[in-house]
Image (cartoon, rainbow, N blue to C red):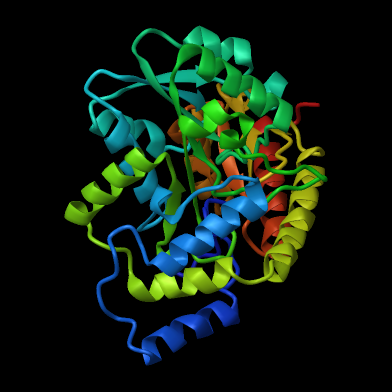
Length: 377
């Protein structure tokens, strides 16, 4: 539609709308000029793994040797590697929903069985220890945990995370903790790493992170993980055969990013916080929908199930895909159907767009809802 000249406003983007900071780009240029264009160790350069180790100690209070760190081609690649290393055919993996849509697909690809645990809106899209315990069976091998969460923006407190970790310890299962959005938290909350819950949790958790969201480096494709030494070694060995090393220049850029102060990150978080506030305020005035308040990342789940059964230009809206299609056609606004995340009564809104586009897009959504509801009060 955009290529045809139509003015479409997109709330569907899953990346910061900022450019990579200039000092990080300059570090990449310097690496090119220095000829850092050769193979690196499959697990990443020693300098970068040392910087990641320092980051874990500084930000998360976790001590890892460089041998326990593996750098990959993005956090998604890291998630795949973790599942490849830990899962056998038929192993069950507990995945809270709404979930990042890639988690169950990776599990199924590797012969595992996704066990979807639906988080309730009443708890802010966060699962409870009792719910987690109820989803675990003798075949459960892994729990996939994501806080701050894509797509809900849910952020678990330290106490909530420790309680979930205690359930995992009692059941003797592994955890994959995806913490890629850890720096994007609003309202005074703080991130807490799952592996910091206890010595047992650290020995049975693989933490996945990366530079994509924090430093607006999505296209550079650098993710990393921290794991017990034997798991990290298995992953590095597999990666050496599957993809070899991550991009050498991108590693140099990531090294600079992780070794620099977080002023640029703080500035980006402030902008996101202002957009989040504006989005929530505008949605609160809309008819027939609501948003479960997100505390992190840059997403919110707009609950649109109350619109199902209504008709738009002769077509009934029965699910999130119908709603998203009608919204695109009728208001020229793009959103992601919640069905992709295991929440078919929602659509995901990303506030990674300019304040001007955000406000215009929300006005269009409001007008669309008005047309859908007619003269209802």
